[in-house]
Image (cartoon, rainbow, N blue to C red; front, side):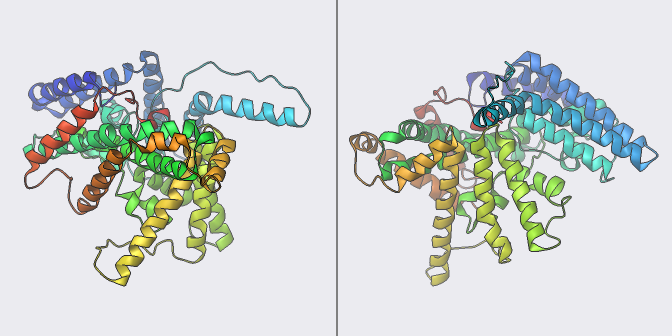
Amino acid sequence: MFFNSLHFAVFLPIVFLMYWFVGQRSKINQNYILILASYYFYSCWDWRFLFLLVFSTLLDYFSAIQIEKSDTPRRKKLWLWICISINLGFLGIFKYYNFFAESFAELFTAIGFKVSPLLLDVILPVGISFYTFHGLSYIIDIYYGRIKSEKNFVDYSLFVSYFPLLVAGPIERATHLLPQLKKRRKFNFEKAKEGVYQIIWGLVKKVVIADTCAVYANGIFENYNSMNSLSLMLGAIYFAFQIYGDFSGYSDIALGTSKLFGIDLLKNFNFPYFSRDIAEFWRRWHISLSSWFRDYLYIPLGGSKGSKLFQIRNVMIIFLVSGFWHGANWTFIAWGLINALYFIPLMVLNKNRSNMDSFQLQLNLDSLRIIINIILTFGITCVAWIFFRSKTIQDAFAYIGRMFTEGHFTEQYFKIERYTTELWSLLLIFVLVEWNSRTKIEPISGKYSWIKMSFCLAAILALGVFSDYKEFIYFQF
């Protein structure tokens, strides 16, 4: 079930009415309704994988209790690693087995041994990376004594399967979400209105921005061999806006939907394309994943302690694992490596935390320097996105090579350019609205909100809720 589908447009009001009119009497009723809704939501993708979600929930629930009950450190660690191994084992089988099998087969073939790998004919369960990380953060927090194990199975099941965040995040923490699920929620009209505005703005990002950019990005990336330099640069920019509009749009819809039920989720994006360096970009992009890797991998590895060489090692590990988390392809690993190479010079020069403050542009040299830094950061981010979008590393290098060598204007470029004036106008409006909303709750809230909401709804309908690009990019992860 897609957020931008008629199915969801019918599903959400039904759940909302049942939740507030039937479930209002107690927290238990509210949580039961949300669990049933979440399991139905997930089963709409493929009901068979519902059993995997339930198994993962049971595994983490009972493992947490056993860790807390363990009377020796050795026993606690045993239960921790049993749980982590099984969780990562399932993730590895469904997401990474074929990648490793094919990679090893190619390696042996390269050195003269013919190998026919045994591949698994399985599809990737939607959201498995996200709900696996939900459970792992909970288990690790129990192990380190940060929280107590949850004895109420209904509450814990809802924490794992809560439908707004189930298939593409944000990756929630038990310390943030579980306390909200353990108390009865009261209807708050202002929060619900804010949620509706956020849902609409998320749909604008997805349907109006991302899906429109996808048409041009796909056309350029799939035909890059016949494109000139400027066309290829445009393709990288279109994809940058596509993936941002797509993923942050999903997050906005998820956060807005959750507000309708009186539950706050973690903010996942904070205007990343206005970052002044790559370190600031990663504090603003996919915040829940970046902070997850920081807290559960980077810090346990030693973080920023020790020598610079030690710190560089930790940064490389974090970015490579982050790239691999996104998909079983060498292009994602290369994307992670490139971002590490962007980040390491800042860390070596102790400038990775230079841009922690907010800023306002004024007519002075400092503002000019900020604008230049924002443009440069966006530019190198677009280069990295080429690897993320390409099918193979060879395609990515060929794309970048042509981007700097094919300066002539081809017939294919003029065919694309003829239809891009409206799109550039749309992107300019989008950037201005995003910039203006950096210090506000949502771009369409505040004065004249109903007028702004009407324009947003008109844009969504005009460009088609039922477009060909329904699926959100991050569903594949």
